[in-house]
Structures are given as structure tokens and as C-alpha cells.
Image (tube, rainbow, N blue to C red):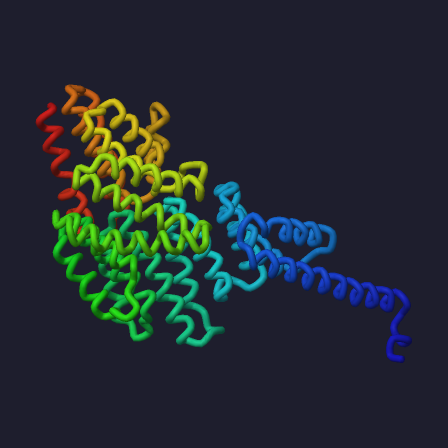
Length: 435
């Protein structure tokens, strides 16, 4: 045998090497089997499998690529189980570290780890923090040479769509519209992304007060895909009619979406059905406010809040702010002004939790859409003014001005800055009157 020509110490070293390699390989294989089982659930049921895999890798050193996958699965499971969002982000950082260590920065799987962190941050409403991760993911995707270009183009469209949504939430309207137009011109465009771009672009038009343009966009899209319509487009069309004050078609479209969400909820009661149903209750709450049907408004508020709390018991998701804000409007309409202000405070604690502290001097972190924060502060200033609390109202005007100044520093487009000033001009006029 060849091995007899090696010195005895080398024979011992080689036997240890082959034994260790087989030992490590078996540990990696078993860890991936456990990760496969965890991926079947992607919730709290995943955690025992992942804990076992981590324990195995602690005893028998696993490859960096294996550790990366385990941390990625742990991040997703922890986030979807709503155990600890901060811990979920720590796991994502660990996944990025091990993916880069195992594969380098230019691989698709590494770029995807950046994208995953952006998704979690954006779902938590941390849009300003999420944006660089989406941009980094797209940039790393562009340097990839391992995958077919058609596959990369399809992935890039989906990732740019996420960046479009982030820009809209941050109030960077011009940049968002530019990304949307770029996506729609792509030769690799497919229906799911096209629908998403149309939905978000229509919402941008609603944000800017171009209600007819949003309505026409949704009508054209629903007509184009009449055999398989988007129920979200139907719902957004209803919101367009609401903004136009045309309540009958608004109610028709909103109820069509609501019945669809109720059907899905009755068939499969999980987070994927609770969130859409909560959203449709929130939309019907808005309709009830315009119809001055206070009893129905109270019912839809209770249901929207109940369903969202079943998904996130911490009450930190940006959607809570929307529900509390609409409840505040209901309380105000009923003449319950103290209660209205209390719900506005609850909404502000969601979108700008730092403001609950005293003496905050640094930039304020905004959770969710920036325009939502402005909307809440503007309404609170008006309520305070109506109650003769002029100093408190003026403080809100000054707070709004501070947030606008802070936000404008991050905007790349002068047109986005212009839209922002137009949006807050009525509050500035209120401030002038108060002074």
C-alpha cells in the first residue's frame, strides 16, 4: 500500500483528517436535514429543529455555509413567530456574516441574505434602515455571474419593487415613481410584479391628491386582468372612490375585497389571513366614518385591532398607528375629545416611539410611512386648536417642522422635497395663525 511509505506520524495525521472530514460532513448533512424540517413550518414549530441543529454544530464543527443557513432560518422563524424582532435581526446579521465568509460578496445567496434583512426591517416599519440593505442586495446581484441572466433579471425586478415601496413610505415620491417606470419598461416584467407596481403607484397618486388618476390606473389594470383580478386592486379602487367622495362604488369594491378576506380567513385561520382581513376592516372603518355610521365604525375598529393583535401582541407594527388614528377620528366625531387625543398619542407611540421620552434631541426614528406621522401630528394640532390648547397645538406644529427638516436631508430629489412641503403647508398656515 502507498501509505506504508509515509512516516507513521503522517499516517496518523491523514487518518485523523479523513475521520474529521467525515465527522464534519455527517454533522453538516444532519444540520441541513433539521433545517429542511424547520423550513416546512417557518414559525415557532421550527425552533426545536433549529436548536437541535445549533447544538449539533456546537459539538461537531459545521461549515460556514451550514451556519449561514441555520441563522437565516432562525431569523425567519423568530420573526414570523413574533418572539423577539430585535433578536431576529441579530440572527440575520449572523447569516450575512457566514454567507460572506463561505461564498464571498458576489454570490446570489449572499445578496439574498441582505434582501432578507431589508424585508424584515421594512415589515417592522424601519424603512430608512431597510433601504440600504435593498440597495446593497441589488448592487451585489449586479456583480453575480453564476446564475442565468433571465433568472437574475427576474429577481432584480422583485427586489426593485421592494425598493419602490420603501421610497414611497419614506416620502421620496419622485424616486419611487422613477423606479416604478423603470420596472414597467423591463422586458422581464411578469404579472405579479406589474400588479405590485400598479398598486403602489396608485397609492402614490392618492398620497398626492391625484384621486382620478389613481382610480383610472386601477380600473385599467382590473380590466386588463378581468379573468383573474387582483383583490387588492379592487380594494384600492374602493379607496380611490372614497377619496373622491363617491361612496356607493367605494362601498361596493371594499365589500368585495372584504368578503374575499372573510372567505380566506374561514378556510385557514393564520397570520396570512388575519392581516388582510384586519386591513379590510380598517378600510371599512374609513368608509363608516364618511357615512357617519358610528356603530359600524366601532365594530370595524374592534375587529381590525383584534385581528392585528393576534398577529403581533406587542402592538409595534405600523398598521396599529393607522387603526388608532381612525379610532381617534371616530372619537372626535362623537365629541369625545380627550379620548380622541389619547388615541392620537397611542398612534404616535407606534410611529415615533422616541417622542414618548423627554428631551429627545437627535433625529427621531420613524416607524412606517412618513406621511402617516405627518397626518397624525397635523390632526392632533387641529384637535388641540379646536379645544383652545394653543400652546400644545403650536408645539405640534414645531414638531412637524422638525420632522420635515429631518426628512428633507435624506431626500435625493428636489421634486420629492417640493411634494413634502405642499403636503404640510396647511399645518404651517395653522402655525402662523396660532402665533
